[in-house]
Image 1: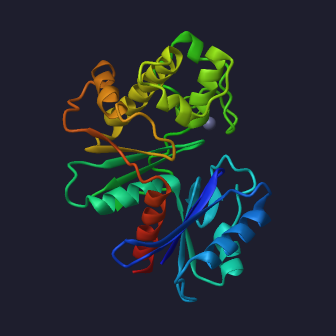
Image 2 (image 1 turned 120 degrees about the vertical axis):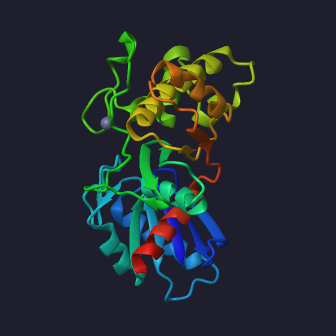
Length: 297
Ligand SMILES: [Zn+2]
């Protein structure tokens, strides 16, 4: 199977063996143009894959919710409401299936740890936009509208006064979790305090004590992530919360964020583990392929 992950920064493509191993993996920057440029770039990327036979189907992870094969709830305006599956099938002359980033991340880890996890699995993708998925008993739970685990546009829990204003979200509301807990939110927080622009990766890389402002901004991010994940624990009681993304947030978050939970969670949370997924787009590609294979079975 061919797997793809596409977002506003890069496109990744790979051929996956039946066991899930990556045989060939290539990437390219996201094209600057609109919908048609995306289709052409995906066509060219797939053509560059070594060993892609004409019969191989394609599984695509998209930063969106997929409902009845249409792309919904995405910050990428040119994808919103599109019939991307139909158009890619026409462009590639292959069978195509779509998966949202949240479902793909959840599927990748539920598949990896089937039977091992105690309780449901919550998957949180933190990139320039945020996405979530939910799995139980080794399988993704999509919900009635494909939106189970869609955490990005919930409101930040227990906000302090300065967190209540000035956070407009592309979805039309103010103060969504995505405006705080995305790489964009982290970069804007740093710029708000210092007046300087830095990427999330640069901010995260300077938490070794040398940049006191970066340290402070990351600590605030950890506290907000603690509040957000505490709400999910209260509601879903997961055994595992997976954090995925393309930017390497400090690994210390897996130790520090759970320390925030006692202040916000009333239930016992000692069996809930926060874990990093360090495979970035690979996890999305692998998860989209898992979901496509199950649909085809
Ligand atoms: Zn929003």
